[in-house]
Image (tube, rainbow over all chains, first blue to last red; front, side, top):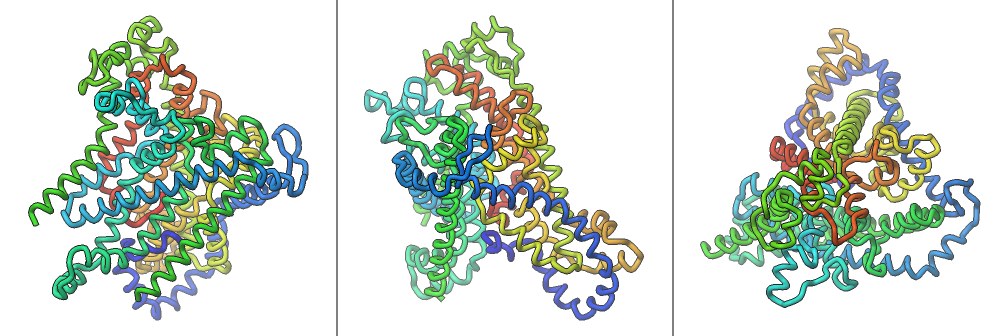
Length: 321
Length: 289
């Protein structure tokens, strides 16, 4: 659904028109030719259905089931009803990690959207080359682990180039990843560094679909640059901006590798994002049932957020039309 | 007007600098001697230039050599992890692209009852984030006795990817039917049409998908962390993280680690150099990781 926004930019323009014209002619020979399609079709779809059933549908249902059980992997799961959910409500660490996650997501989205929108608009106006855009997506191509390692070197209190610089100016280093106050903003900044170029290229692609004539008309009507940006660019970009926000929210909510390699949730749970907490519950304390409950809670949260955002986006659209 | 352009270009330059600098810093640190690194952390160029860190990372340096350059003694020995990453990413890419392509063909070009129902059921997978299926899938792979095997790493995504099927089906729907019908009239069956006509016509989107899948798999960390604790199957991402965590902070072999990160990122950088334009253009119409 998220993807459908882009259908029309798929390279199928001429072809759809052609097939529409063809349709009346096609039906007769087509019907005969497609008579024994069904068997082959099921055969071709079978691997996908099996993969879907075994590694997606079954685990989803099992995950929901496990969230009502006490399960430590080595023995069979034991049904305990709502006990995990009651524990969840009373679990201070869970609520703290939810807050930490939301803080991280908000910082990532706000900072990320500002920078990538600005970058995309500027690149568009400057007619910058594919090379410039290409260089910007480099961080997106490398793994979160490599990103995390590189930034922990650059932010290292004694050796890191940024802290050497900061020490020269302020006389003391900043514990970017080692202090409660700095950990989450630093992680968000690293996350933005990694995804900014990708988002900018997405928004850039959206900008290119806006016809230049609209701006010409705006200019003739005497609109200023800022007015045109607010009244033309933003409303016309709305679908793609909504998509980028949703993608950023979903991926930031599930942040794990950068946190796991740098702070591992510390200091004192200051950066203990939900995914980290779920992992620790399951694989450090082997409390799989409870970890499944938290996964379910996170899932429900994500679905709710996605739907709210889509609803809001649609409401906004009817406003402007 | 021109002042605006100067400011705009300055902004782009700053953004590019922030983007590129960490990559340069990786290289600069990897080519440094780890002992000398702390004496001159400010140096823009490699401190006491050496390829030693790369030798350590690949396990080519003797323990004495490694210690002399400030390595932590234990060799990183990434060759095995490098092999594992290649197997994991290549295997998964081939499987997922192949199975998605044939499924997409059935959904786009064949006429059968239930086509739309099955397709929309499969698409529900796009809505559910990985987090819900991760733990049960781990339990499943464990119950199947596939922990620390490539099968365990690859299986959950090998046969089915909602996004890949959706993406290819979308492209196939737009293909003209004429060549296909000519082939059918000439007596070609659906399988022949699929493999000889439709899939070759889709080579561009298939290549794009393969590229994106390869990148994602190469960079994957969470799933390997769960199912392959053993070095015989664990990929580079895992080996790097383990090395960072098992080293005490003060004695960390930063040169070795940065050499290792470069080795881990190198295939992506090569992919970028060869297919950069294709990736940039594909982002525009994929819009999904």
